[in-house]
Image (tube, rainbow, N blue to C red; front, side):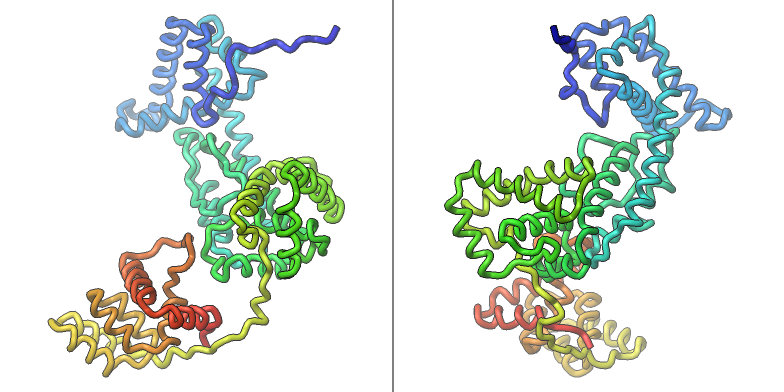
Length: 456
């Protein structure tokens, strides 16, 4: 007779990964594994541990610290104890550790502190692996996140003793499968594990092909909060479905039309089976044998399959199945800004404009003295013009100058990775309002110019 797995009283899905200690106390009490005397004992021990850590924080000089510091140390202590409890075979055993007969909060903290140190070293190793496998891309959020001023900050600023729950890092890059319900070093470790897997998959493709794919997705992908792995995985799947070379990540317009007709006629469950078969083909072509990477890809498929399903229902498959664009083959329009003014002359002009009472005088001064595009752009940021003054000024510009302004202050992308200053937001808003009130044919002409504009 086969063994019957013991059913645990505490359900794991009810526990918080980020606040494990607090949640296990609550669930253990609810299930009757802990009583009020157990909770009172644990609370008293946690207060003693706080007093001990506060004395260490003050290097023995005093146990008096600010309330916010005490709260931070307590959160750090509970996070560290939670790491130890989380390491036990199951939550019921962890609850038993918290009963009066077994509870030794100081010892649990020390065990958790060892686990914390190990995880920190593991995360540091993963960071080096991710940097070694870093993709060659122009995407700002990806590069900034992997830099020393992104995740790198964590390994300089993380305080294992008094801020273990904290995550001092600048992370903008979005994973295909976001990391949630984790804090501190656990979050960083999981994030880096998944980013490493994403990198490992993408390294199977030439950087040039990935660039063409992302450029086809959005010419301004450099500034988008876009996940590269998801786009590459989707493109490789599309190539497999269209019987194209998977490593090229490229389909043609006729492939898109053919796939759209074919998939529209395919029953949903048949399509899902076909997708899984094509993923197996991708494993074989790319020689992907890592079980960790395969599991991550299969987990990512949930999102991709949902995108395909919605696209078929809305007849927007071209938004999911991207046709790459070779940016090198697109026609270019050379734009010359002109010679900038000397700093002294520029400052004098700014002061003169700020002193002007009438819009007519401001515009007359700008027209007379500003001879370069860069000076004009600087003035828009440095001199607070009214919206009607912006419009009057834009009316004096040609289509190429307006296109250059759009290139510098884009407003068509849904998400910008870099925060804008108040002055930049104002210019962007007035520029957008101006362009959108133009006749449709002129709007399209200006946007086409902007797409092909390059600075000399």
